[in-house]
Length: 134
Length: 183
Image (cartoon, rainbow over all chains, first blue to last red; front, top):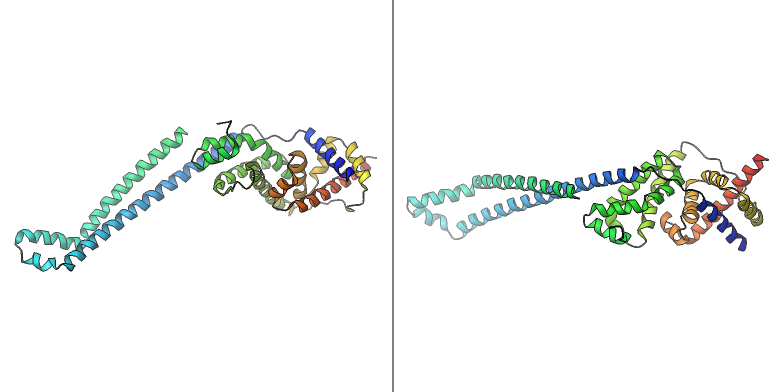
């Protein structure tokens, strides 16, 4: 037992006296360059994902609103009443019909996608500025 | 920033502060490199693996569960990465170790370790299999306790104790063989 401890002590002392190998001075810098690159890539991926989710939620909300309007018109029998009204209301009806035929939704979708693209660009720019600051 | 503890730095990195990771890199590069170089030998490969270790640590920092010290967790990544790399190379080149483990009495062992110079001890250490060499490095050179070494290599304390004992005997036999060769 005593011998064992002595041997342990001897090995430990000799290994600690010996110079442990050292990396080149550039190693820390190289590691940090890779980490910063990865951090930027990760931040960009996160922004794109967030914006995509936002756009998806926006489109879904618009679709639900459209379906809701059509259902309300059907449910309360608004369409026949509207049909009996004067020509002024014809335009309203046309709007509702076109809404039901989704052409308006297409337009609104384009608008929401355009807003999404603007949001992505803004987010990417702010991320880049933030990464540069760090 | 430099007076923050490892745990505080980890928390800041998880909050998105890359500079805090720089502090951890600065603090631990030397020791991680020494451990990796102890397994694969110093040079470009050890530097590449050290880089890989820190990138892995950064990518998986959210998995660091504070169950052990950050340094121990980092060593574990270093050990696993270096051992995997070394094993891949060992498949190509088998290492012949001396037979007859346990033949030397403890008194002879003690005498061998008393007389051996540091360079010869390092040469003998390089001839050990990578896992034994890593354990010797961690326990003797880096002063990790048996429990910490067990944490790093993913084993238990008793196994580590046995492995250290075997590594020590293997070292003694290698030193003896070297001495016999000189005479």
